[in-house]
Length: 347
Image (tube, rainbow, N blue to C red; front, top):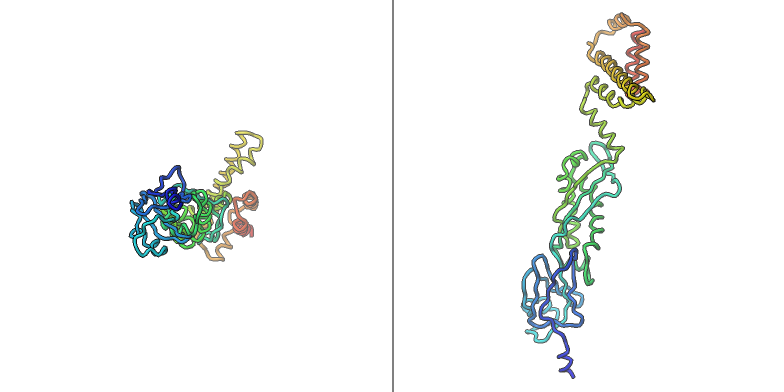
């Protein structure tokens, strides 16, 4: 009877995995009660690794190559099974294959803006997205930490966890780089390098190597982008008040055209544009003259102030300044400064 049972047994001569489809990270060789033949062959292809697991304990690990299964090629398993000499009978062991090729074009992105500290702006909320590639570098660690005893483990079951790790560490990467937001946005490669450096040890704890990461876009929410555009515009004109006023006037031209044109169509729009430009030029000239005027002694200024200045001209200028302030072209501080200068001329 024992002889018949032995004959009925199925023995495995070749253990191998030909990957079918795409996206499988780990695959368990189907044993189904079969035993591995002593002297059988293990085939591990390029971009694969295999491990033998004995009663839940990881034993031998194999890289690419073809192996004849003996006590010499299975030293850990031999020790666990107490084979003190060449074994003659078949044996049972779980065999797992792992794909070590790159898993490319894995997407990541911020579903909502994230807040980061910034040297230039104090704090900003940004959006970013890109992709990354990874591979299994330590199959033993990946088996114990991630895939376990499952028959197969696809990329899809892991991508959500990895994407979450990328998003979680964006703030740390930016803080660790010491770079302000504008430098990161202008140099996305630098941003990607900082994020990869932050993620490498975290991925390694899962038995995974992050091969590459790209940042395809970094942007601010629309309302913050408008503020940034204004700041850039002011930076371009610097301390030149005349140019600053011209810049503000140019920004306000659409408002002038809308307010002055009303329902008058093209003619009204043209009038609004002309009025806006004229007021901007008058104001810029007045301010420029005030800034360039030499500083005279107080007594001389007091004596010279009233000469050639008519009250109706001062009042007309004040009305124009008030109109510019109400339209947001002048700040309250700029209006008050110019108002004080004009009122001195009436003394």
